[in-house]
Image (cartoon, rainbow, N blue to C red; front, side, top):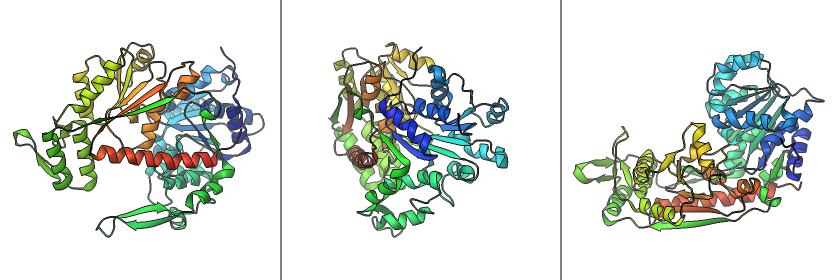
Length: 461
């Protein structure tokens, strides 16, 4: 069993957590931030009262990644970890066993706070993928984040926000996360104060109440400066010789009939499919979703999940990628359940990424030629790099964080750390002259802003 020999950037993460009681660790995926955080807590426990610690994470990460890291490294074997994920009733049972660390999924936060009340035992909180806290507001806001806010500063001595994507949807994502560190001292005591200081409101369209918040020209530099003392940023490419990431856009053209249906939805918010099936939408958001469906090749026709196929252009484009891969495994990211059903029909050899651990084992062992995965379920904490180095986005999705996370499951950092000296191929199948192009441009715009933020906040190890 290998002993832990921290890389330079991992030593920097450990030092930052030890020296900064409430801090951000913005570390790219695959940089070993989990083992670094656990090591920092172990070091702190020699001189400080940091246990029990609570780790909040997405479900799969809470149940596997954190406990597995403790088992993996000999210097952490003495830590007692209890998993209280998957059901609110598990927390009290876990605490009775007097653990050093309890891991829990975010879904159970509100119930946990209610259960524990003033008997809150956790001296340290680790928020893994801390963008889950971005919805916090002093009033209203996300239920889970608001419940956690009741104990964050009253009972918790140390707090660590972990993420590789701190601002997937722009600078507005930062206030909620930062509040859990300093109760608004750096970015404003309230979200409204944050908005008023660094953003301007613009009216969108003809509706008087439709507003868009955009950063002031000086916003990014000032926000970066205010967070710099409590934030460390680490990117693996600064330290590792990474294989290249080769990105290719595959354009398809909608057939004439599918194009007509698409234009009717776009302009009239109504179309009639073959057989007289009517499809109507009643809002701009619903129209965008329907247009994304049409671009992929199928339209939902009712609220019961029934759908009709419009075209197979993206299916055929994917078939070409699979054929050109010459037997190499292909990871396919889909968005809608209709996409999944059509892909399973077109590619009988494909497997869906489900909750069964054997699916990931079979993929990494090379026994699955095509793995179909929804980005929301194939993000944080999954290691898929041993199974392949090709990913295809069958459809577009507005969520930058999910987009980047699923790429990194097989991405250059993980390829390098696993000893695979091979490039990573990313294909995006885009329907010409559709909302696909708008989503892709928006994703690239968000990525540019986030990259600027991470670059500015980066600290030398």
